[in-house]
Amino acid sequence: MDARSAAGKLDGLTLAQAEVLRMVAAGLTNEEIAARRSTTVKSVENMIHRIMTVLGVEADHSTNTRVLAAKVFINEAGEPGSEARPPA
Image (cartoon, rainbow, N blue to C red):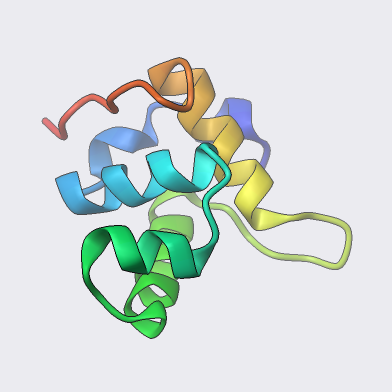
């Protein structure tokens, strides 16, 4: 699935997931995200996996899922540093 067809799915994210996706879109590493959220890297990895599921982003050998997720965020919410819309 490309970023365009996944756009609009941000509404399915929790506020915490939207925050993590914003950080992914801004280029932060899992370690940096974990530090900012006062959690473990494993927790961040699990959340990112759930985000990818909600967005319908699937991994394959030619696709970087973090880049696809960032593209979804940017298409839906605007600039990587901007706030994502809260879920409906």
